[in-house]
Length: 303
Ligand code: GLU
Image 1 (spheres, helix red, strand yellow):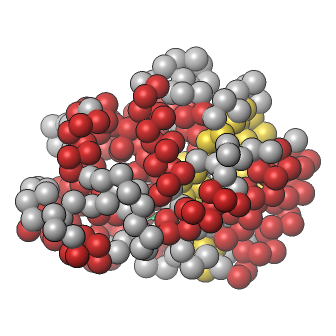
Image 2: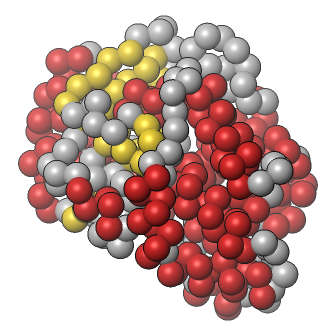
């Protein structure tokens, strides 16, 4: 398995130069464009890593999966989906367009920025630090890595330049969807800056693949919630390329603008990928191709 993973990584690394590293968050520019690595963690307990798998990255939008889980634990399905919808948008992740066009300012789903900001506002805690700690605790439990923390540099970099997200936040505040907008945005920027490796992402994916049980066999998320978030990963996890990804790869997955991809193959494995060169939709250009190769080779499609 390791040799195959290595071969596919080297094959796809060449594609990376066709993409671009996200630069609207200045700190994200610092990673070499041809970085590509992956870790696979299987239900049998094997952890196989290859390429630049130990390069650290921030979770960015992958954190949206974690906050959705936590909001569902905190409030239950009915309350969460009163505030955020269940439909893919077909628009870019940070689009404000549909929010303004619809009768109620209810974001279409929790995987776009507007939806994720609403979800973050629902996390219970005394203050921002407390809420962030709960989010990081869940990542720690899912990944089995007690050292998970966040990058102050990336957080500050996005906090200083995240004008579009501020616009979304204030739009939502104007419509009474969220209240404490600066604190909510502060939490959102921090959760996006949580630092992980491919192994952490693979184990988070594995925990979902095992219906909420982590590597130690501990049930850290209720099973129903894992079904729900995996479904969102299929319908909206890869931005406005989710349809194509479902057809070509067929695995529940969530990407982030750092080039992170967390994929979860039910009852089989979790896969964590780093590949910071992005395609037009904001997905790792080489990472998507790598997953496509692996899905074909190992027959991973759930469909
Ligand atoms: N922090 C990023 C933003 O809100 C996350 C976007 C992403 O990874 O899709 O712009």
